[in-house]
Image (cartoon, rainbow, N blue to C red; front, side, top):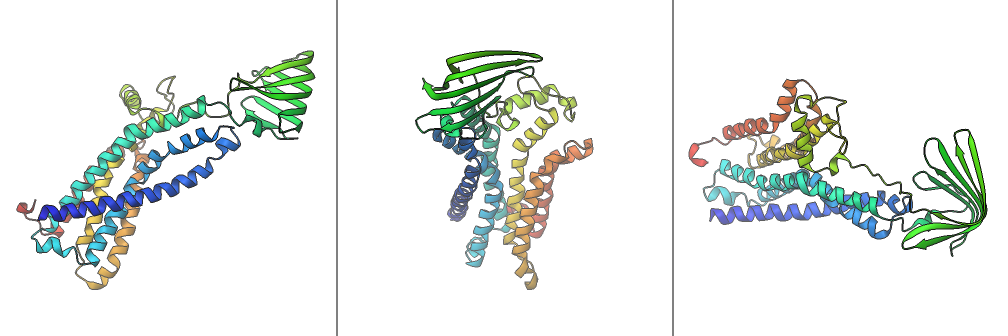
Length: 376
């Protein structure tokens, strides 16, 4: 009988968690997707690349929201059980409060494992895959990025200006500035031209103009009647360098293992390929592996709902206070990595704080529930 009761409780929590996490994740994803529309409007990538990139952000959003949605789900279901007097089913069947709290703690381990899997593998993989789509995609909407009588910086080191632009790709009054390197610049001026697309690569077929090369104090000028300006050599303005959030956890662990004694150094970088500050790598590993443990602590906070205050006037405000207290602790726990670069004593406290908080709070719950060893 007890197993069926606990199974129903876990099912209710999981179902509400699934529903709330989907709703909140979708809302955040839509807001973020709107903010990322410049992938199309400014960077010139196609609709397909845009949707692939935004969809691959969902694991990251979901991972960041797990601890919040779990606390909301736990708080809502336990509060619902209490208000409907369903919680009495546990006590009338001989289930002790500490056994109930132990079950909540065990259930939270599922969410800890889920977030660890997301943080250490799924999120870095999806973030890296999404960025690779942007880096390797062609500028499918390049023609739409060129506007009449406006300087268009559609590609890195390339600026284009046109006086007139027709829908069929014909352009007039063309000015192109290409920055070859720090010392050399190329400027092309043409009376007319046409945007061409050969094998998915864009270029400009230019007529009646001249090419000017500026190299330090030297100037070279060439006139032409017709030339093709190849744009396949240019890359989009999309970021090419991998971020630390997109880097595999194993690579980060190898870096910390190599530079562990200098893990707080503010100038030391790990390597040339993944050139991140060692202190940033240390903080990232903490966020991926240590922060999820706080979910167990949050589950113990939520389980306080089954312990009623003796004074009635306190009971009226205890739920609200507990909810605010839980959310405040979640925010503080999520920011605990910022103390890693302090003294060794503070660093050790930051690393051990999840375990210490769980143990201390569990001891408090044992006292409040009049613990007996046979209840475990």
